[in-house]
Image (cartoon, rainbow over all chains, first blue to last red; front, side, top):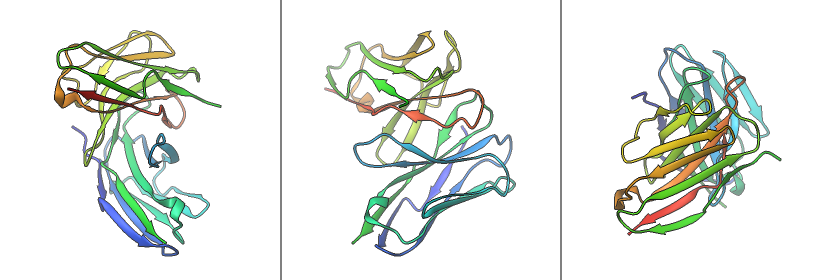
Length: 112
Length: 113
């Protein structure tokens, strides 16, 4: 079974603070690394899908980096806001027609 | 607007019943997936399909089967529901080419009594 690990499992951050969390994945047979945000009572939605070593992607205050050689990705949130409260999931796949395996997620809570 | 639709948001079934969870997508995606989500365990893959009538086991296929007779529809079947199958079930789909970004349904919360 492919192993995708996320840390920390949960995080409580003061509004306005910046934060980051980690996803580690197999460094062999890499095709893509995904980040999703899952808000309560909604469907998970894609933030980023990254395919190249060294990729950095940004969407507003959220950014992500990718290191495929060592098998990790970081997600950064700058100036956390209450609407950032969600579970952040990363997922790995080894080819376009292969299964996509998720980590257990990081649950982020923002304190006003 | 892209859409993945799951047939039931909430179901309550009895042990031993046969349960069908339906998923339909309108994006002409080749890949379709069924996951279950349990607290502390994240999303675990049950089955996936990359083409009509094709299926591949995920990490936890025991007690489940699937059917993909049409490209837009992927059904998850619990032949004889058990209490340990009480969970949130999520369907997702994606193109076989490109980034592989997943589009999710809203989930089906199944309780087996």
